[in-house]
Length: 409
Image 1: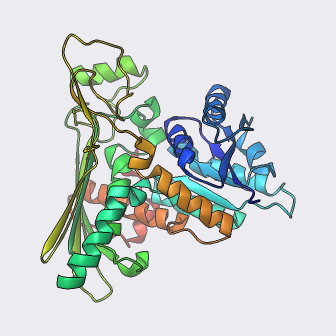
Image 2 (image 1 turned 90 degrees about the horizontal axis):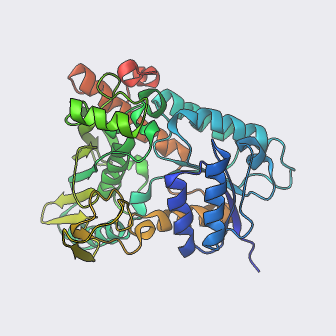
């Protein structure tokens, strides 16, 4: 009988709960436990794993070091705040060193973005290398079923007949993050660009990459970007944020709520390709706005992740408590509303966790590693620098390794 891979989560918040829910559809894995900034959030996440029967023995740990030292934990998923990524990896290293030689960590997965800056991301990757466990970079969009299937068909039929695609677009927008720390620059490290364009940059690059080709087959040459504050610095909305999250003063201490970037790429034959990406916290609709496009000589692909296949309508006479029980980032409880029948699968969490758990269980290198997360961060920092200096930036510029957007921390 196969022994399941036992996962320990660092962080007990929103993203960890998404991962735990997705494991209902993943074989050969169970949740061993959770370590978090607060005991309450760790207990709640562990309880969810037990409730969903994906972690019958899941428990809260008092520290990351304790979790990493426990031989009952085979692999770790890092889902903690951006400002804790380096310290978390240090704690994992300390705990892993206490494990019996016969029971080393079998893998470490790290949520997007890898850290707050390129320099921190490189430190995270270096610490993972010192620990010696295989790594994974958790970018769910590369396993979203609509994108996986769309890419496969387009490359097999369109590209094989008329040539490779040359332009990919990706946009993700919603009305703003769930948690207070996203609105605190010194903790988050950035705004909509760092929080969301990490998805779009990597998904667009992946769509342009020939199936089976290595990630390095596309080389980023030039990044041009614009950032702005379109909504949340306005007095009314800054006051709304302050009321919702005491201590947040977005009018005086902010990053950005809108970002757009163009990246010029070169493929292995020397051809020029483009990606266009945009992200914002200014969109108000039934849920997320999440669109992708891929264009080639005689074909195109369009994916609207908001098209869930199910919609309901509630008149103004139907009232109820505000929540997100229909779709993530739900902004209303009345009118025409989409329903996501299975959000963790729809957004790729089930697929990505299936991939990483299988890779770690088999001792294989996953498709995305911490190194790839560093390369995504390199482009994000180039975008911030481009926006600040009003010029295009080479993502290979060594100065990006010490660059801090907006000098926020």
